[in-house]
Length: 115
Length: 113
Image 1 (cartoon, chains in turn orange, brown):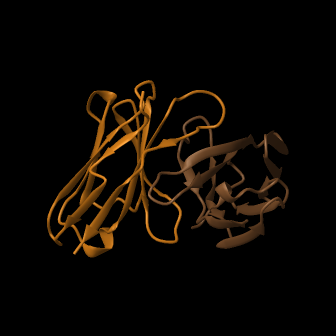
Image 2 (cartoon, rainbow over the protein chains, first blue to last red):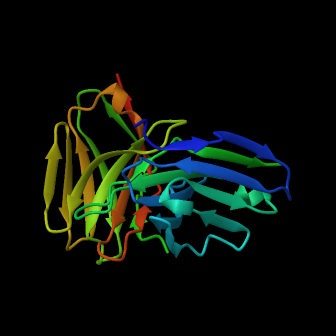
């Protein structure tokens, strides 16, 4: 297993366009998370899935954002009608649900630049 | 509402000396705490964790201390090495149905050779 993969690594788009990011988690992991990180800030929680069920969404996730995880495997994060404020690094992470600390394994991220 | 806070944005330490990174939290319901390290152009990588029922956890050069009454934890790195230069994030999470992990804003550590 090569870890958590994210695609694309970089995306430049014009304001108003739609973008989609894909995340392939570690295969044994049943939890999948999306975070957003801007310069000088820590990762901000957006949403998470347990298998295919989306269990929590942040207030940061406006109705222009939608995430899916069909069949509990890979996940997509779509941003519609992008705005310049959406420019950020979008991080995906996965973890194995169990007792103890929920250790997230992160991908390298997808950097979005909205012009 | 910043539930996990890292008040020092940066820290410089000489190689071989101790690095101490601090973190404060406000939510007494957190069950565990984690430290992550991040290099540029990479995602954060897990370093060490501690349960809320413990006050210390050690792994090689890394030790995390937890003071629940003060809602404070710290990461000690000794001896510090130039390869430790990175941004360090403190994070916290709950258990049961609360599986969100909340991150601090990070501290950039520079270890000077």
